[in-house]
Amino acid sequence: MSHNTSVLSITLNPALDLTGQLEQLKIGKVNSITEANLHPAGKGVNVAKVLAELGAKVTVSGFLGLENASAFEHLFESQGINDEFIRVAGTTRTNVKIVEANGEVSDLNFPGFSVDAADIASFEQKLLELCQHHSYVVFAGSLAKGVSPEQLADWIRLAKAQGCTVLVDTSGAALAAAIKAQPSMIKPNQDELEELFQQQFSSVEAIKQACEDLAKQDIQHIVLSRGEQGSLWLHQQQWLQAQPPKMKVVSTVGAGDTFVASFCWGLLQQFNATEQLNFATAMSALAVAQANVGLPAAEELERVLQQTTITQH
Image (cartoon, rainbow, N blue to C red):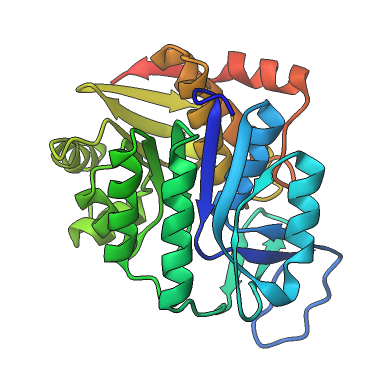
């Protein structure tokens, strides 16, 4: 496998996403879903799917419950994704996402399997092996029960020691621990940043100051995702801001994962900074206009790329 275009996408706590659409969610009442689908997901799985569709060579790993692995296996096979997940006893969790007509999404995230010391040792061995054939490693999503934030930090260090560029998209204690391991990229939103600093930010300036403090810990790319306000990216002491056009929101599910995948693709393709942020922002904006995670039509992408503005901040 060629080292330079290959990405290892890791999902430590995958999920089957059951997405249901309805007009308006009424709490405490019977709700009739108008449209539903069940599909394999988890942030790293979504990242892998988008990268594979863009044309990258992708390997997936992490932990997968033995009892309901077939939907995941079918997805990986159909997308030409190399499956190196460690199978563990139990079932991969199901997450329910209720999408209202106005685009609001309510998430009901269920607990999944627990991993034990033997599972962790198997994964670590696998990670060491895979890092030797991949240039980029993405850790995305939450941690399975049994995996500590410190463990995640160790795995980031392990991947870096093998010469890999590590991108991380997680939150809470996992993000705090990951930052100490100095990955190349993190992508918090404002809520996640506030949780990290344990304070509220009332201005963009305060948010930028917090990110600049994080950058001092030798994190090359700090992307702050701001929903429909686009994103801010700090790289080499330069701030770029991206503003996508207003999209008709169908579902925000997977938009952040599409951003991470597209940002990683930009690194693989050696886009310049403006191109890279433009591409990731446009892809992510188009992701909210569709119900499933995947590639938009080329002409749609072209239109949104042209309507996205990138400015130095």
